[in-house]
Length: 92
Image: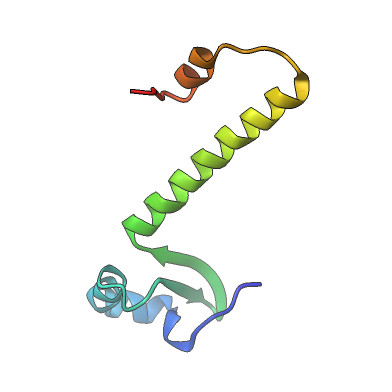
């Protein structure tokens, strides 16, 4: 369940008027995320580039995990080099 802190909620109008203030809050980790409201409805979420990269890495690792589980369940032998090259990885 998603929870919202009052300081994380901002109207799109207020965000536009005070963009640099909110940008600084995100970049200095005073806020983890900002929920932007448009017409009193959640419209989008703003996160830092570091947070985005973290979630992107997490999603990639989940895909690798799923691939390993799928292959394990098929009982097919697959060369490790094939899996590594598919995900552009190496063991060096």
